Amino acid sequence: MVSLTTLKKTAEEGLRYLRRQKDVHEAELFVADNATLTARLNYVSHIPSNGLEEPKSIESYGLSVRAVFTDPKGHRVGMGSEPGNLSLDGVKAALEKARRIAVHDPHFMRLPTASSERRTLLKYHDPATMELTDTDLVHAGWRVLSQALEVFEGTASLKTLLSAKQRLRDLGLIVGGDVTILQERIAIGSSQLPKIQTDESSLIASFITAMVEREDAKGTGFACSTHLDKFRGEAGAEAARNAVAQVGGVRVADGEYPVILGPQPVADLFNNLVLPSLSADAFYDRSSTFHGQLGRLVANEMVSVYDHGALPGQIGSKGITCEGLPTGRTDLIKDGELVGLLSSFYETERLLSDPDAKDKLGQAPEQLKHALIPRNGFRSSSGGGRRFDVPPSIAATNVFIKGRRDTSLDELLRSVENGLYIGRIWYTYPINGLRAGDFTCTVVGDSFVIQNGKLAAPVKANTIRVNDNIHRVLGNITGITQKSRPTVVWDGDEVVHAPDIAVSRLKIDAIAGYMDSLR
Image 1 (cartoon, rainbow, N blue to C red):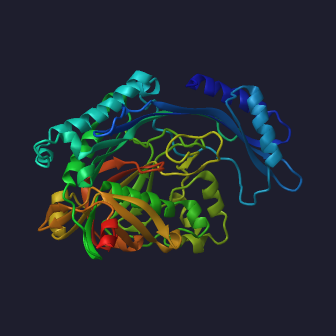
Image 2 (cartoon, rainbow, N blue to C red):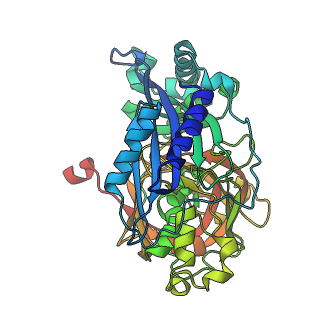
Image 3 (cartoon, one colour):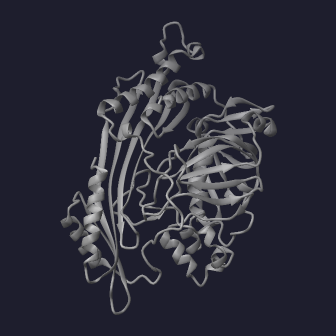
């Protein structure tokens, strides 16, 4: 990777050049290097396979210029980028692109200015992860796979499924997924900020699916860490255990059930429905499902949600945003009431000057400055990394969901008594637009029938769907566990520290399978 010193030097020299340009009123230079390293697992017991595929890496570095150009008819704003070139020539090329495409933006007020808040997170990255070798990556992948196979080999219940002449591999044991390392370095120079800002971050994540194919049983596991020496490969063991637990799955009939949503479903619902609606841009364009409800109840009064990007040791933490501003805590829902929004500098300025802001937000904007502090302007790349070639948009960091009292999963199970535990969902998306709140998703594994307050028979994977409304879900929450898991979902930029959540009723629809059509 390009050193942080080089990125900072580029930002310093480039900003000096930009300040000398006569037609440039304001300018911002963003310099970044991002690398994603992946070890893919592909083990199949009954078909020849490598177990661990060839490790792959993707690295992109470059710079972008956002500039405000003077114009007799009003300032014009443009952004241009240049890949793989951190020289002054690269800055000049990016500036020329910005100049060519600059337009009048009536909503643009100014580039981000210094915040009244102070940066608190410094030197929080793991040097070992930033300097990861190919051997380290391969070892991390094998660690995950080995733990999965150890669980399969040591599980007595699997051996009872074999006839006299069969071996364990005849059950069709499958382990797939990946170990992914993300490395980020950025530097930001702006005519509106007092000095060059830099940041460096890293994380390790693994997402594993295991199957006992002959029994049509599937389980999943996941783990995240900020430091290489804390990565144990436990996601492989978890996935294998969950696959074994899904042997003998049953079908569930249509109906409304009391349910417990596990950490992954909670994170998926927040990623696809709740957090997009807690974004300032969604309020501006009236697409939020919480349109006009700031200061009102939007969930059960036991529910509180906040985003915090400056917590040491947390997976989603960043020292600064991609606008050069400090990260920090933003309360979103407090005791069921909507109290704040995720925002960037541009979106905060746009909403505060919007004549229709009171209708869109639910309160006059001058009452809501505390609710619109721009702590979440990131140049996200859909699933990790800080891209140099996209403008800042809004993304969460570490999202925490809390209840009013400490509750265990066993207590939730007893409170539900008879219902469903939903452990993993997939293809979660809004129906009828985000604002309506309607959604659908498929239950794909790690789920159980709850009987007499305990987990009973596993629910057969891909046999039920959830079709409901997020307002009903949030309003019908009856319990939240104290314990949560840092959870990252597919294509998500944020980390949701997700608890188990009990919901008094959820609409379930059975899915007809191939064998049903033959009956």
